[in-house]
Amino acid sequence: MSIVVRVDKCSGCETCLASCPFDAIVMKEGKAFINEYCNYCKTCISVCPEGAIIETEEISNFKSQISNLLDYKDVLIFAEQREGKAAPVALELLGAGRRLADELGVKLLAVLPGADEPEAKELVKWGADRVYLCSDARLRKFNDDSYADLLTLIINEQRPSIVLAGATPVGRSFIPRVAARLRTGLTADCTSLEIDGETGNLLQIRPAFGGNIMATILCPDYRPQMATVRPRVMKRGEYNETRTGEIVSIQLDEIRTRTNVLETVKEVSEVSVNLHEAEYIIAGGRGAGGDKGFRLLSELAQALGGVVGASRAAVDEGWISYSHQVGQTGKTVNPKIYIACGISGAVQHLVGMQSSDIIIAINTNPEAPIFNVATYGIVGDLFEIVPLLTKKIKELKGI
Image (spheres, rainbow, N blue to C red):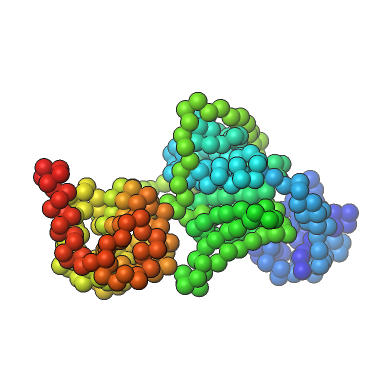
């Protein structure tokens, strides 16, 4: 059921605006319209003196919007920026989007708000065929309303079949609003994206039921197919200095905002570990046994110039702080080398590290699931193997 306004009966008296507790009614060209904030409380129906607001089974323009799925093509990514520079997750989305677009034989589009043309050109070199750039200074600081308006406008005009955004605080905040306005589905926190070879639908894969299973979600009947993607699980595409593409400048005459961002304050953390940017991560699990085991891992990390990570089991035991946790409830990482020591390989942990370039697993159990994703597997005791690795690396480095 939906609440709609019959514009032929609406007199523009604005009585309904004051009655709505959710600010879900707006005036456009002298007529009332219901937006995505509607909670179906039906208060507006009873107060409308013209009987113009009704409850209906279907919305005709919505039915016409999805009547022909073939009208929708191309892959579009939302390129998040921070202080005018494309965020790392935007480059990861370009890598994933380029792969999907090539498989479908369509173009890869990107929307970049709040940045300048040189940054848009960088997105082209990372794989975009066309970048929609809105350099308006009012978009440099994130705002739910203005970002949702811009992205909805471009999607309605370009009709992409697939829309991707990062599962960051920014993406998680406003992408659901866009999906609600478009009346389509949204899969959050995806860790993998594939194309169904038979139907061409997007297979949106994400952990479910606390990470105990991996669910594959489809949106076969509505467009666009929308998903947010976890940062650090997708690999960046290839950077091509000579690649060319189209940059389309977008001008917004009016930007609708109900709030203003007065100041952005960066959080200062005392934690020195930076798992997201680390090239080498030595992670310990329950098999590390406690402080002694993690001291060995720390020595190996120092020798490699890396950092120490951990599974949830090790964090729950109190052997290391939460800031080191890798996995579904921790951080998602993508280092050059990930050494898993005494980690069995539960799916919750694999979700956070399986996109690493090289995975080395050390475990006494040859049947441990971690070996299924490992590039190299060592069946043995980490208390024997890790000191030998540390010694050898120090010898090679002359430490």
